Image 1 (cartoon, helix red, strand yellow):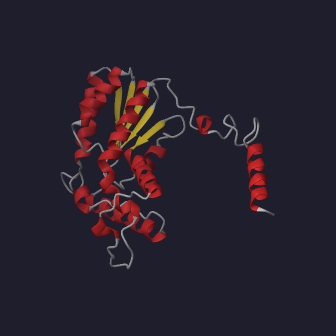
Image 2 (tube, one colour):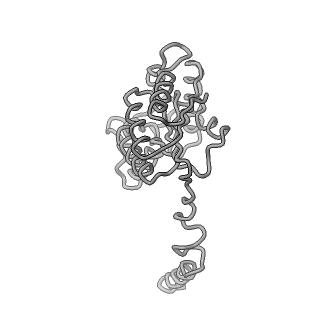
Length: 240
């Protein structure tokens, strides 16, 4: 079949798939605006996670029943999107002296292993998403470590400004040695799988969160968040 005829046949097939009532139409059941709808606003509730990387926060959220109906905001998701975008454009933020650097396993530095270079930009995007979602009065899950005390008054201010009524600060802590090992296990398994590799968290970053071998700064910040939220007349609780 001549290339022009083949092109026409494929285009015609796609035209049919994009027609009203067909699976690729803009109003089809699988359209993302339908799939991503359904975020609850009743009760104007917010959940904020706290605790070290690889501590099990996502697992705990599932155990508590936080899933469908919540808008989840995670800077790590934006980090992944930024890396994938730059890879597609051929603009991955990879320093020249690192691009061809060989590592002991005879591999090279993989895309997700440079995620630290995207930290600040992804945080800005997550903050903007949080602002938009809270202004839309959606029930939100703000995922992170809550390691910075400066976030506490900012969060409470946003909750009050947008009329939120309830807050659940979900604190998940594990001993330092466990957090370090879990972070390595997760990264290494993903590196072995290939693809974009695994997100590497430096040990110093994890150690910096800990005040003792078992207690993180996140714990004090989560408690302070709840106390300040209660003082602002929110129904706030700390869940561990």
